[in-house]
Image (tube, rainbow, N blue to C red; front, side):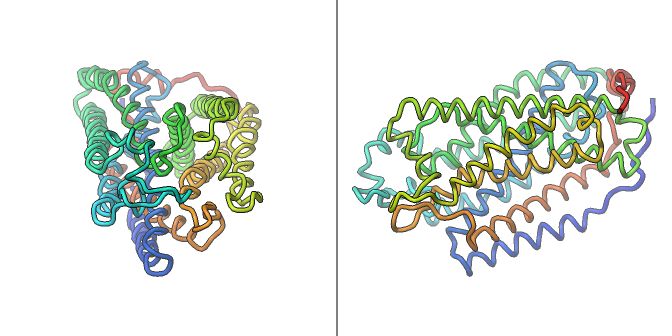
Length: 419
């Protein structure tokens, strides 16, 4: 069976140019706003794009572990996106260098002399840190970060190699190999994404306790990956590449998954909030208190309104829209809903990271501040590199896995009629 080749290989120069410009502008932020704000922006942007990549890796593995048929024609685009992981690892190196050259600048616990925000002692005298120091130390942070990227890059390599090789010889051994890698890779990825978000984000406020944090990040990764995927699919359909391949029922299935993970995110996030509110333990409630009111005067701060935006924008709006059957089939509206979900995922990461950096009163830095410019620049810069990596991979192989054993089933997936 043959499949139409891409009408024209997309240009990579524009994406790389945007990436370079965004990275350069973030570097300017070091001199304008200081190293801490620029590094914080870099951390937000990296976590955002890594999260999307992890979600796509999980979707590839879920496809293989369930031997799914319908998703075969869309799987290749996720495989192309996995090419960005090695570049994301390289872009994470500046944060590792800062951890060693200026310990405590981002993660305060890396410098035992860092004063606590309540003014009572330092990290080195803090009993809550001392109890966690076997995990929260610079060597463990560096080694685990290297291991995380090793897992993600390694799994991506094998899935891509097997899938692309099957285009050439059609051997079913590649499908069986991917199924085995998925069986081993799912628990590895689940553990690595959990420890990664704890090390990189949750440990910014290491006094805080939450057993739901890894699951919260997983839900966000899956939603952002599905949303990015549907934008790519519709873009390829508009270019002409996916016409005759991508049908309404493919979009409906993707929309169902987007709706499912919207509900899942709400369940996880509400459970975390409810358990902390119900227990009313200061070591847990302070995290939410700082995101509602200032520590110094008790007045509502900007993060209260960001939190309300997350409540309605992360759940109610996409939930109500994705319940509507015609919207899931609309090539005009489903990518717009996807773009909104991606934006809210980014806002959620800002909500989790930025308030960890406080002023001399112990109040969180506001959301709307000049430093937000560097966050947007870093997100655009790293995003440009990721898009460039995707487009480079896109031009190297077939549009779809033309010799996958389930390709016919996917191409003839029952098509629903759009109203």
